[in-house]
Image 1: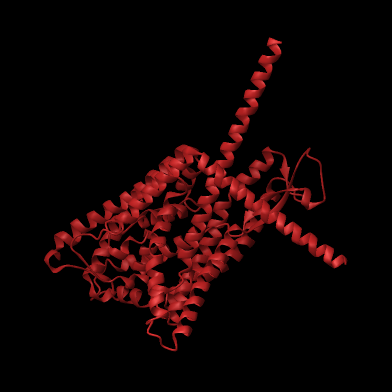
Image 2: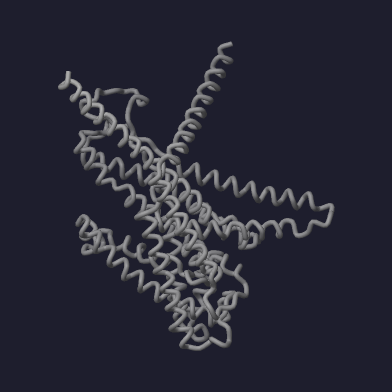
Length: 476
């Protein structure tokens, strides 16, 4: 009898939790349609993303598409296609996308550590320092855009790269290949960066992340179509058709499972109990406030940075003559993600960037400062240096755990290729991580804006009632 009562209580609690979440979602949905400013920002974001995706379908004049599926492999071009927003698949006017900017941001992130004092001092100099860092990042973006455009041009002219895109014979001249084509690619990259910045400043969400999201999302339909044709090659009433449909169903279930795991891990957090002086001490953790630490402090950018970092040797090799350079031959033979050298380099570099970005993104020194200003402390831990050391250990533990998770998810496509699954239908863990994390992050930003505006309206109502209340007292 007692067991049944406990079971009924748990069912009621679960139902209440589910009902409250549903009501909260419904309220957010209704509030969104009442907020005209947020609707305008959302429409503005969708329009800019549509322009970017449309630009990604416009192939540069003089380019002949032979085999676009070659870009799904784990080499430099495949990474550039993923991070750039998918425009390289059609060798469009935005083929480079925002990959030069991401590479420049990666370099600046490394330079902002204490190992490089001049840049580190700029990063600590407040708004003026950030402006100077942004200017340096823009110059680096232009340099990498020029370099990557030249590498792409050499890849077009080199038949040994396996790049399924070629220049048509009528325009295959040095003037077109080394001047006009790079100029179009650089202009397209700067245009993509312009769109991303406008989304960040005037739209909803992070512009850089949303551009990558748009490129990956636009490639999902061709991926599922290729998977359908791979698992169900013919619908001619063969006795094996049921087995083929079942295999395709398992493939789709695997997609949904990976999405669920990525979403669950993105939302997971480690809660550190905190107390405030004068608020009353309590030993019951349920009554305490808490500091939420993300289970993956580094986020998805650690994988993106590691992929771009690993693409640098291939990009440099592309500047050499393939026929005479032994460095070029070694890099293009061994430095692929599907080869042992490239795969283990990916593991090591991802581990390093996850730890580095986990510590940088968490901003532990700022948290410790805020604790000191607000007289907040962690029970059992002394304020100041001991609190900072305690949080660093917690972040390191979370980063170690999340690095294993990111390596497993990020290497899915390359492991699948090793076992024979075609590259054009692979799960692509990195792509799915970007899709899910950007969706959740954007929705959270929308909810945060709705809450902020709701609080602002409540304050105005209270102020209005106070003013009219005072006037009423004076009149009567």
